[in-house]
Amino acid sequence: MGHIPRPGEVSVAHNGALFLDEFPEFRRSVLDLLRQPLEDGQAAIARAAVALTHPARFMLVGAMNPCPRGYSGDPFGPRACAARSIQRYRSKSSGPILDRIDLQT
Image 1 (spheres, rainbow, N blue to C red):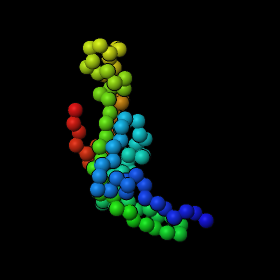
Image 2 (cartoon, rainbow, N blue to C red):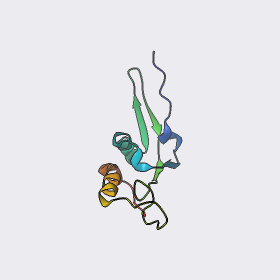
Image 3 (cartoon, rainbow, N blue to C red):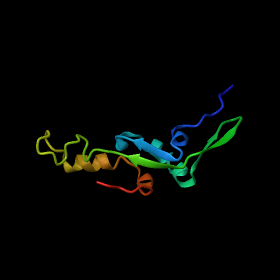
């Protein structure tokens, strides 16, 4: 017998903020799961015996370094990241999730 689904991180962040540090390090599939709660303001959980909906109105805040090594623009940091490396790092985040958030540098 399974457990009754409990609220997850998006419901715990209800009426607050969900902060994801190192945003590109999260798997795309995990980030894509945030799309529906961001749009609907609720998180639906369906199991064999029960389906529940939890409130999930939250602000998604993500942080990332400007390049994989984190030293882009730092004159005292180690060797700068190559342009191709920066592009690959930034492309780890899903386009559909990026369409739903404002980007600030």
